[in-house]
Length: 397
Image (cartoon, one colour):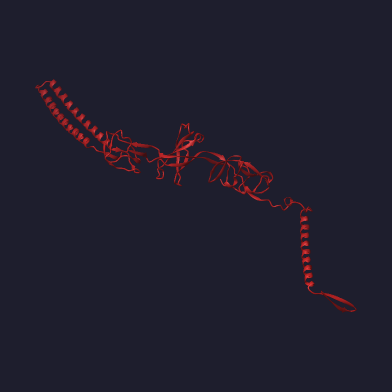
């Protein structure tokens, strides 16, 4: 380090030179910055103490500028909520008609329908060979002609006898015999006609006909097959094409089920629901499964195939219950609950029992009266006893 002397007046002056001079300047600059920062902090704390009424150490929760979390709440009220029972079961024809041989049978000559076809009442489904029966009918028709000829001769003889008895050539007894002969001849004509009608009716029963209009479900006969009254069902039909679902319900659900209840049926493999209504409720319960059957009537649709499996949602009664959105319902190990806003705008936990779930929301079977302020969302971030700022939301319906 070098020192230089300068003469000012009579006293010498020494100036510091060399590498130590810039280092000292930086130290002074840093010290000045630190002093400024400390002064700013002191000013800030002194000002905050004045706002806190002189209590510089008061917690933020006790300060007048406290920021409470805002939460959306609603008063759910009570709404008419339908009770929906879900069930599964099989699809079937509502009135299934087995069709077999009504007459004496014979060899099938033609089958005129296929499964899936609609037929009318009395329409021929299959024909049976009738050659022998046709010959019998022709023979009976000829017998009618013979009987009519005999009746005509008897009629003529009776008329002549009436003329002769007036002239005294024959007795009244002879006239009476002629009249009896005529009556017998006319009776033989009627007998022959009845025999022919009977044979024609038998021939007509050889054809296998639909007993009513409907949809052909199955066919179990082919041309050349010999059939008789003991052959069983050759066709199965759904009367009018009407279908049904035989929903299996638990004993408790069946107790509240009523005829006429509306239902939506969704077959397996389809996303489309078909409307229907309960037309019959089983009067008995299976002692093994503790279940009963509710039969849901359905209109015909190609997707409704007898023997298929389906799921039904049946509306069974209704009740006035509070309804909430799904976001309002919380759940943990203790069960389902909601948060309501109590006195002093503090959060209170309320245990609830969840009812039916639908597009309109979740119904609350118990736990709420409907007049509480219920937290609609953000319940997972709240805790019981926490003070909040409720923001009331209007609920439709």
